[in-house]
Length: 191
Image 1 (cartoon, rainbow, N blue to C red):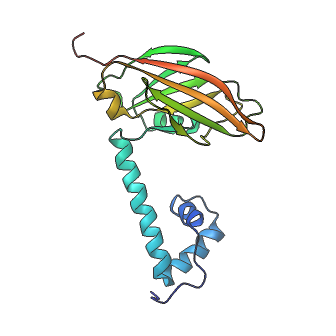
Image 2: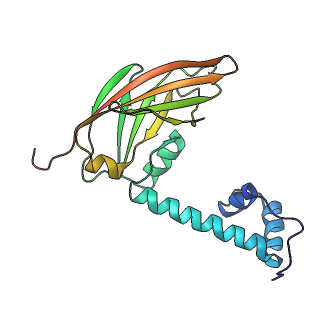
């Protein structure tokens, strides 16, 4: 393996696609050849693999809150992950909880997304200042945004209200798409 400075470094996106096996055969072969001779790019690939391992660990421990795609939820279901799903109507609420056997909880926030190109989410716990998630993933055709809360937090949290406001962002500014309230009840065994 060559230890000199790389003159044609492989970018983060290409290395990530390589690791995820998302490249065509020609691109994969080109990167294989490069990695065989380049210690610097090999080290970058090792960092991506380590990062992915950390994300998997955090996900498995229920330490990640994220806005995800329906395709991601479907992959979890295909892997027999025990899912609990809640559908929350636009400007509505839902009563929700988490049971000991649940591995992932998702909230499907119904929203009119036609014409929306960029979407932010403002999340609120009680009277706290909102946490803002910028440019969250969504499929405008689906009419929903999928939220995956931190499962570890839900298991330990007392009963509480969690609110989310979806905000479309474009050149004209911001407009509220919908508001959602999740009325979380803490699971108590035997009740």
